[in-house]
Length: 209
Length: 98
Image (cartoon, each protein chain N blue to C red):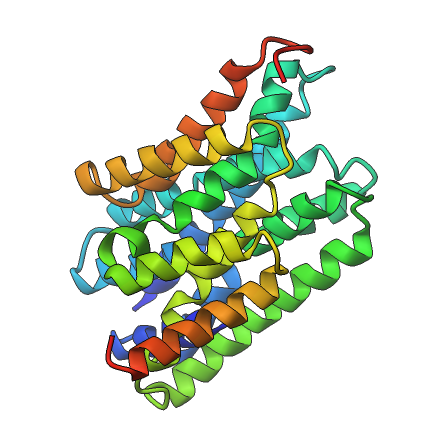
């Protein structure tokens, strides 16, 4: 949520109206790509180039929806449409963790999903209105919330087959891509490398433990 | 300024498309092949770990140590507990001047 407030603050600073700022969060609802769009806007990049960056950064959602979609069989069409709209990193992580040990219910998915969505929109609004009040996010360690959260969430999948090679290769390739090609490709290419390890690792059905 | 609204609408549409596309493609399969199944099961660990990369590379040693230590901490603690301990450690270390 501090990132929602930060986005609100930065967006208003860079000339968006409060309505546009909140509209961004409520419509796109994908933190990292919103920050990148702001950065590119400030450089007055053409719209098409901003859109390419947004899609590149959000490409991981294709894999999220393929993966979590397998567990939404009992959702109706409309529920699926809503479910995919709110499918963000933390919800994906929590839902995948959930299917590891029990059924993914509508109430669990939508309660958590709605909480995140409302939290993101409201914190954007607060940031847009009261921006600048939180002067030093670093002093409180807020800049580390997401990294620590995601590393902890990654570890929650350590019981899955091939966790170490998958996460290890993804991390290494991601770092190499980040320092060579640059962001946002470190997410897509690093992730695909880890996924490729899982696909190649075990020949259909029974393999070495 | 209407440009901004156009950008918001198109970004929103494209992002929603990425969130729907994977499921749309996958639901065409009658049976999901085992290799694809294994690949999809690897999605969370492989993708989530890459989100940490920029802070890990661009951050100082304090940030790197906190991220790695949080990974180990998560073996024993819940995600929420890990985040709280990690943030406290970062705030303390920084107020001590690191």
